[in-house]
Length: 131
Image 1 (spheres, rainbow, N blue to C red):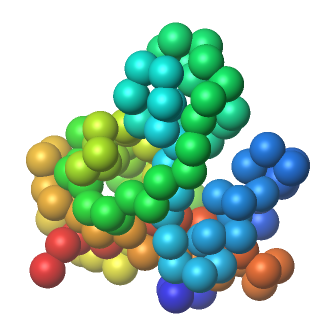
Image 2 (image 1 turned 135 degrees about the vertical axis):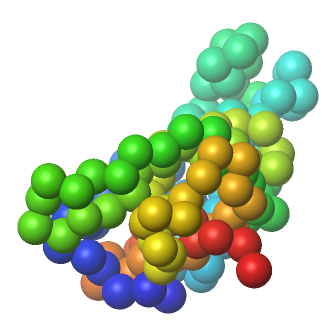
């Protein structure tokens, strides 16, 4: 796992999404899949945002995706890349691109998940350029 940076803090959790955060500590990215309509969604929640069914289950994501959009934030003490990454499974999530040359980040760039340890028993899913 990568180390926690100055702009990252441990997330707040609740019983509904605790399995998501527990999985991040094990280096796994979980998504929710609806058994009603078959769609996969992120952010993880019990109620499907597409059909409003509460028949949802956790699935493990591949951890692969592509950059949909991004912005390099430079007017801060420690510059960083904020991005929307479209996962191989379909959902798009807001995240950070880490361990890269910020000037080389591009739309449609393949990325893989990397977990940044919060020091509080879980990790933040972020992405690095795919090898």
